[in-house]
Length: 308
Image (cartoon, rainbow, N blue to C red; front, side, top):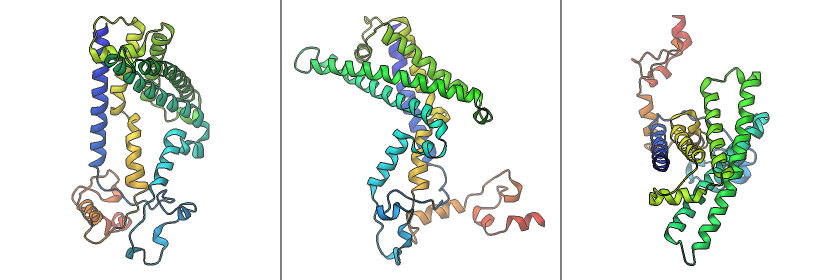
């Protein structure tokens, strides 16, 4: 049993990291985006960002260098990642269950990190001055994990109820959406039962995994919980739940990309490369038959072509 637990932990970690790298590579290789010109851009001058202004408002903006205030980007990212500001503003009925679910995941990730540190500390400094640190980290891991598991279960249950009961959500709920939430519920029920009801030591499992200690005994429910959670981690990057990666590109490469398009600059070269592509869209009125380039399509009036 313990060998299967260790192997599932390493396999889940490798597939998760590998899947995230694959996702990042796929998004980074996509064609250059269309400029949205959406404001406010948080890295603008604070006085302009407050009312949705832009440095393009300044006379002779092309003559001076652009000033980027990264603090605004970081604040906006914090509000969206940890407080789900977008949901609060535009879909408040979904905010509470989504917040509980995501914040529980953050606590679970923090618990896993504390467990790894506690296991490494316990493995390297079983005795000595740093031994109490391992004990403290193990306690933090257990309590943080307990809180995280509880919040994930509550949030996932509320989201599942909404998917099944709310007509507005049921209209675009797919089987995969239900499966994903049930997957989370199963993983965290097993983890919660195994580690907090049967009082198995989380940091001991991480310490055993680092040493590949085959003598460690793990309760069957706890071991199954680790296996299912590892499978869940491996599964996430290959589904739409990898939106945490897509959001980075959406924010930084689309919504907040207000770089000027200078002559013979990097942006101009990317735009030129995109204009040479020959798209194949199903919409007949666009005329994207794979023969004409974007530049040719953009130079004609699709409505006039349809009337002919």
